[in-house]
Length: 179
Image (cartoon, rainbow, N blue to C red; front, side, top):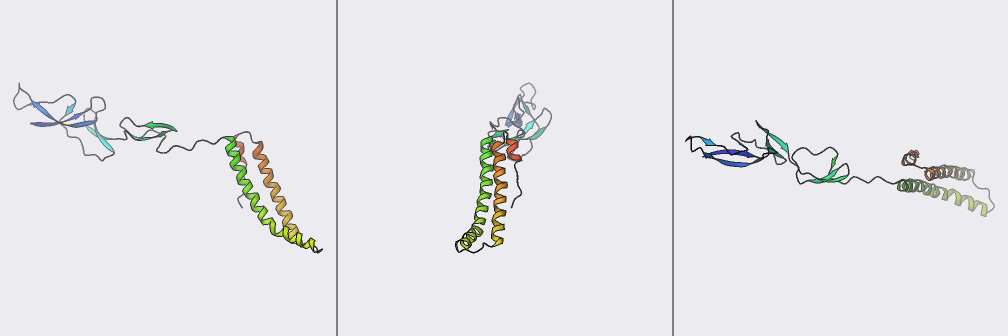
């Protein structure tokens, strides 16, 4: 009895051990089945399969059955070999529309405007209280309020730039220094 190693006729993938038949015409010799070799395949890890190339075994990645995305297209791996270029196990984020980007950018700017409104509350209240009592408002409060009003004008101009943007690139070009 002699063990030989069977491989797939197209892919060369190791299929298992088989027993070669005794050659009835030549006792002591064996007939190897088609697509088999006397060379034992190497031991490979679970992510690989031995493949016969006609003269030797080598390890090939085996991702068959894995599901994922290639350049955003849903894909199931059906063949031996490395993962295709552009492979991802997670669905890529869809590209945002112009209106979605505009809404996000305006929300960010509006958030900055809200911060300025909260900062302006104290000096505005101090000015109102001073005027209610007939006193002169503190110049620092007046200057601070003017400064906040000026900053708010800049933020509103940014909103206007976003609103007139005709492309995603134009929306993305609207930037400001982080405070």
